[in-house]
Image (cartoon, rainbow, N blue to C red; front, side, top):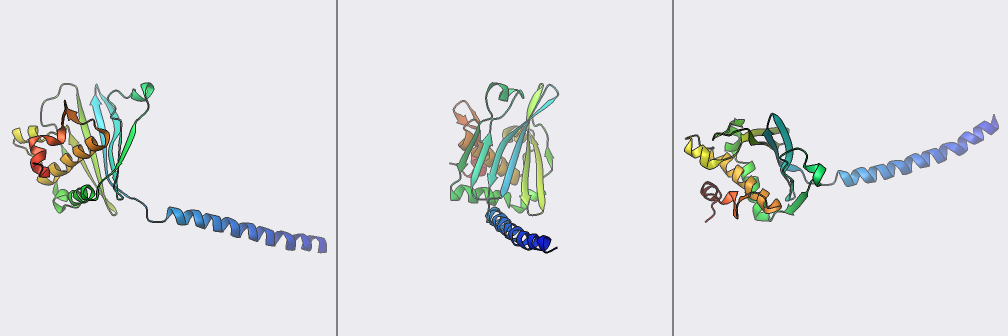
Length: 201
């Protein structure tokens, strides 16, 4: 009995010490994780619709600390077999982040439709943006098929100014980070509709 009691008295302090050390380490780690961290403020998922398939790519993500992230746009779904998914990042300048936040927090953005269809004929493929804007507990979601301000205007169905501004900013950020949204040498965001929306001379 005394032997068992001695073992218990010896084991308990060690077990308690181990538990406390473990707890301290755990608290330390969780403390680092719970420190102020960047939150996602905008996500754009690109879906390439072709021959009955939907091919998903991370088109753009922007975080509250100004980090913008873009991945390779996939057209066939087999790109990773030939080359890795390329991820590029850039830290937005304070002015760029402020412009984006103003667009995301524009009250008029909450009034736009949840889906905008094709504004011009397509044969068998098109691109679709799934735009997600977290607003606290609520996440705004907008689908835009083949974002094309000029086609929408010519169809007499222009995008609402809040959506036009955001779409042009998405084009601009994607081009600034990844450098692939251009027709020839002209970035998409420099079309006349976007230049007017973004106030570019």
